[in-house]
Length: 513
Image (tube, rainbow, N blue to C red):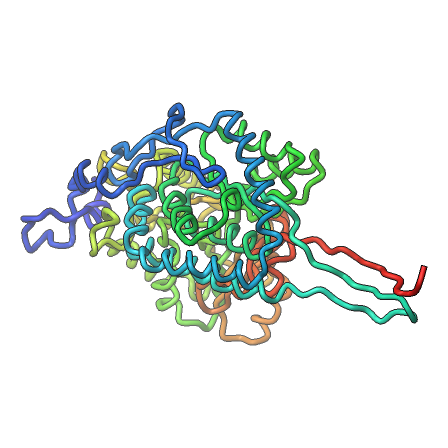
């Protein structure tokens, strides 16, 4: 284990004063602790829980590698039943008054808030993020439901001026049963984004949750079940992604496909939707550029960058990844960034002193190791981190690569890990050219005290969401989505229900026939 890894290794209970900032990576909650917290995973179809199905995979605790429980594999009959249940549930829910829909949604949200700490423990067990971060994701997601419950009461239509004895009306109606696919990296947030809008609009929904993190989805469904949501309005399926996607999207019952995840999978699902002539709402991958201009406090921004880069171990689509820094502040920024990463405390998500947990699975761990090797082979320098920690669980050092060539994987492929890549540029022209040279454009960040530069970045940086002088991302009241290969449509904000509703034009002659 190298010097950096030693600095951020986990502490042992009886460590000396000299090693008080270390953690023992193999000190983990027992399997008994895990099994006590983790729920039984089942399918939820037509208001019924189904458990007796063949195992698809085991959910694993990223901190230990221990199996938490099996994931059932939905059969073709289960999927057929889910579609029929969603069709029946839609007929009930579309005719439920918006005020009643909002009441049920808010009752479920009250239960989620009441159980936030317990649901967070499930999320931490299956994802690895710190308990504080998991609870933060749950509380933030509750705001999505708050917003959409209000949107349900604002889904107005229009009456247009018309000739005598002619009425022109435009109705906004729920599109129908929705098929949603949610990712493992934000199992609460993505689930809430899609279910909140669908339910508020009056749609039923079938959610295919990620097989790696199904426990969070199970806990959320229980809250809606107890809140009195009619059977069939919300359904949960798990198992073989290829069979589930082709069956649900190909059915004439489903009317909208929505997905959060990688660009490659999103394109595949969009193709399936196009063949079935269905609209698609896609929130796909990114590789967020961070432009750091001249005349800023580079040391302070370096500290902010370290915190932003390591949120959820870098496994979020809006994660800051490509740091494009003006050459005049490059060295102080890099020094500050690297120092903050070296001092970061890494540990099990249940350790209250841990600032970053493990990666979610062994695939991400292998990808991180390969990405560092690729960058170094092309001439990059490792300023912090760069190695796996320990041999149990999926821990990787928060890493900063500097002087990274533009053709390195870390500059061209979404990292989805705690690896940041830095490059210096002579001016804003060069920064924007590099920032826009990829086929994705989800989130972006910029730091400048020059208003002219800020306005230019707003116009020219090709992203769907831009944060200037901070690393926050859109909340429930603002739209979120990407440009180019980063997706289709927007979630949240004033137009959040548009994708889940259709407009019907009614021209009615009111004279005698």
